[in-house]
Length: 148
Image (tube, rainbow, N blue to C red; front, side, top):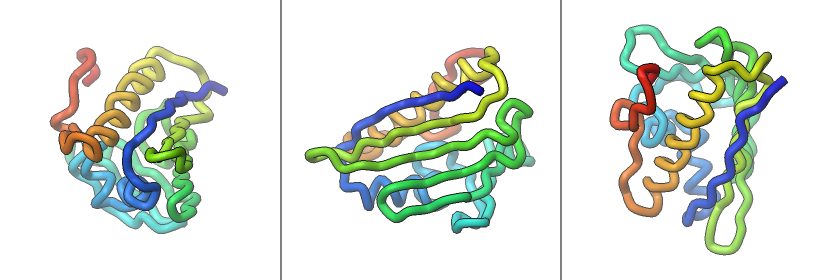
């Protein structure tokens, strides 16, 4: 199995960063503006990227206030279904460190490389939303190729 991993330090308290990761309102501010669903454990969150059907549906498998958000992809691109996504937060000085993992890919296919770059851009947008007020969720994100 292969994993995408990123580390980003954000100048904000863990509570505020957690709220952007653990609520549909928060997620809509940095990943995609069109998010709905139940963000509680056992619930499912639907993410839309310009189509009438959700591009991805994540089951919320774990929430630990100010420390951890865990999802399992239950619908979306074939390569994503069954993968796990985690956001682990730790306070470090004046910043919150976000350790992001999109894990359990069956193979490190070309789409995984694309997703790694896009995750980096979205996580940097999360950081920018706190530090400069300029997050860029879809559809305002940077296109990196013909895939988006």
